[in-house]
Amino acid sequence: MWQYEKKLQYPVKIKNPNPATAKIIITQFGGPDGELGAAMRYLSQRYTAPCPEVKAVLNDIGTEELGHMEMICAIVYQLTKNLTPKEIKASGFDTYFVDHTTGLYPIAASGTPFSAEIFQSTGDPLADLTEDLAAEQKARLTYDNILRLVDDPDVRDVIKFLREREIVHFQRFGEAMRMVTDQLDAKNFYAFNPSFDR
Amino acid sequence: MSERSKLLKAVQQYSFAVLEASLFLDTHPDCSEALAYYNKYKKLCDEAKKSFEDKYGPLTAASDANNKSWQWVKAPWPWELSANEEA
Image (cartoon, rainbow over all chains, first blue to last red; front, side):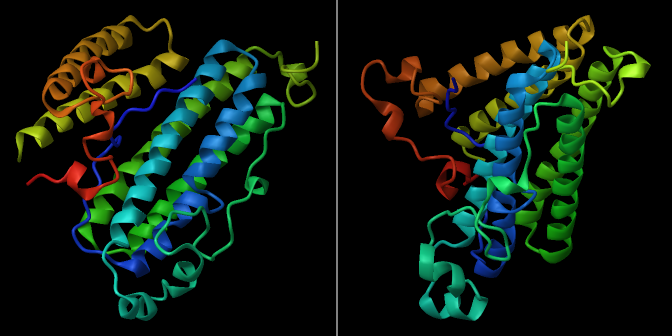
């Protein structure tokens, strides 16, 4: 069960709309390393995690990712306020606008819609946590690339916050991985699924 | 910065400290130093939320700020610029 809090984790206040920037940022909503995929990955994997600490990490980081998805959507929403058809055409946002107007729809920057094919839930904690560690790095580098492409300080400030969170999550998943391997003996590494084999 | 912005910022800052401590405690559940940090900021967070809700409406649908009238629909939603502005 979840309870919504009517606040963003970190404020989003973008003074200048910029649909070209929105087209880039939206990739962290519905793209291959975006926040929607991150939330669905961890919240799907948590059920079969082998110990309560790892269930807690997946549950709580998965929940935080929902808040990050909301922040990304807030950025896109504010970047696409009060646009004229002329601005929409000139910015290249027209290819999104024709299907979605300024509604929020989870796609990658390339236009590919969100797909559950971008993540796994294997039922094997060593495989899942290895994917989770990679996922945090992939999200971090996507934020690095956004920082290479976007000049607006209002957008950059929020993206820098989200980038930092990927690094903290990577640390927590590393600790979770350590907990799982500490419960196996050396002979069992990669030959035993602690969530399935008995 | 407006009073609403100040109070909201306090809620966001203390909530962040609480969340960060909870994630750390998930993998270090026996760390008493982290638990003391969590308890300190949880108290400040609860107080900040109460101060905000008393003046500017509920942060959750289950809040006491909804008891007399359904204030949940009144204040701006968090993705609106007006909910984040410092003016």
